[in-house]
Image (cartoon, rainbow, N blue to C red; front, side):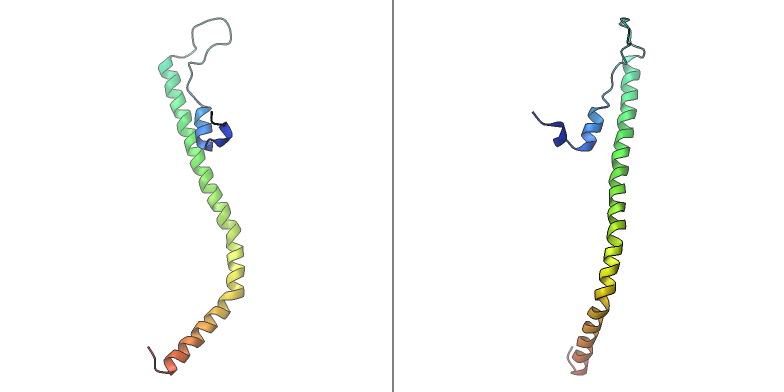
Length: 100
């Protein structure tokens, strides 16, 4: 048997929103809505859950970019001038020697 923690988040969300015929709390056996209406409502909630999962994935990507950007900027500030200087100097020496 698979543990619920092993399931992807989107499957957990969709599984928790299974359509049901909204049983009344008292002993009246008649549901408040028809089975078709309950299925339709459940499908709409599943679509909502799926859109939330997609937007959360995008949110994580944006957070990662926001966190990495200052680190990348610092690395470039520290290393790019030396890299460019070294590569330009090597290219000047190559051209000065007449090599292609």
